[in-house]
Image (cartoon, rainbow, N blue to C red):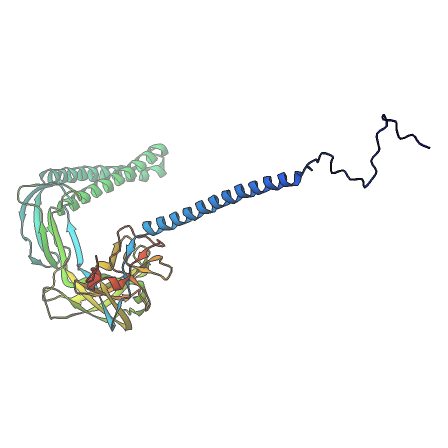
Length: 412
């Protein structure tokens, strides 16, 4: 039997016993704190990503705006089709068939001239005379030296012949015979040298008279009576040109080089003879394309026995070719640079391209393009001076432009 009255013994609670009167304890939840930190980090990451993406977007927009602002604004329009042509015209330089400056070959003073500018002279005509007193005296001296040499040579030859006749009989020594024989040979050479000097001075003396080298016209006279004339090309005395036949030189674009035939008839026109056509003949070409201009140099000869045409003038040379399509563009669209005549075009990607073209007729406001353009090209109407190949451009809407590229009605 147990003792339940002992106050020192506390009752032991059993499992399932009601403990509502015992103090309650809060449980610890570490997962909630971790989740909060993760959420905060995600918010910071989202804000950072938003800022980075926003900055990238702004940079892209700035770059796009900068490119659009930097790209020059141009007006690009398709060229107007022109009438097909079977002939092209090029400028030609007219030159004399023979062109020669005349200089003095001896020094002295001009005593007389016989023909002035514009004079027609025949080959061998005396143009002028030069006085050369020093040369005349040199010739007298040289002739005297020649006489001395000839006398010495004659005496030496006689001595040598005499010794050679006595040598077989042993009347003279062999050494003396050889000495006089060699002396005769040396004096004979001295005679040849003196005679050559006389001939040289005579040739120089013949240059005292200046003769026309060919049939032609005196186009310049740069000397007068009493003036000192020096030998060489320092001072030109006369200038002559042969004008019975003239040469016309022109540069034909490479694309037409195969259509040129030697001997073909070529029409020529001159501004001083409006409405009149002269006929020449294509006589020769350079047979090589100039790499700088991509052209072929050709020569056309034209008869000029009447003297109507003048060397140094400008001719229009008319060449016939197969029919080809042409285009009409404003003169302001033409670009003149070291590479030649070009126009600027714009592709579908708004990239500018520089195309070499060949100009046909030019009326001052528009030009005819016979080579270089094709259907579908858009030509820059007034290209900036800084335009380069492959440059990005900003074509403006042609509808907002008036005729000739000027702003249309209602545009600011």
